[in-house]
Image: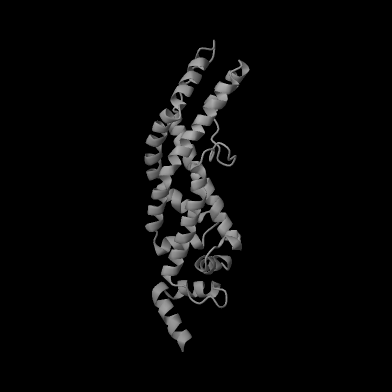
Length: 236
């Protein structure tokens, strides 16, 4: 009798076809998860990823010594880098690359509140689609809901950070030196815009790493709620 009442309650929440699919996917003994539990589980997973991965990027060398997200020079500046090294200015070229990454590390400190707000706004349908989607569905959700806000927040911070870490002076010197070389094509790149976009790419790449881990590695499900919620995904 209890099972019948529980099933009727669940069907009233989700609709017959949708809830039956969820019920069929539940491992034995987990019981029926409510909308609130599924939503809370996905929010917990996202918050864990944000806390664990985004915080890594804000540390010194979080970008510069992480090959997965290290910001390399844009194509037009790769020629600049090569030419400087050819004329014995490798140290200046290395410093130019480092300060770009330092600016990104500085900007990413602004990301967490934006992500946390996006997670708070998540609906049950968002959570359900993420849970039953592909291994990067949560990352895609964050990209779709935060990219505009992240760019608006990152861009002025990176511009300010360039001054703080001395990137403006370094790159002014680099560009001046390069443009003074006879017969080269003059350059004047918008490094603030470039670094902003690369910093955002790095953030989402690291969140995707955490998302894949929690979807595929049972030991990464650090709470009973995460274990129950992602058991649904395992059975899809």
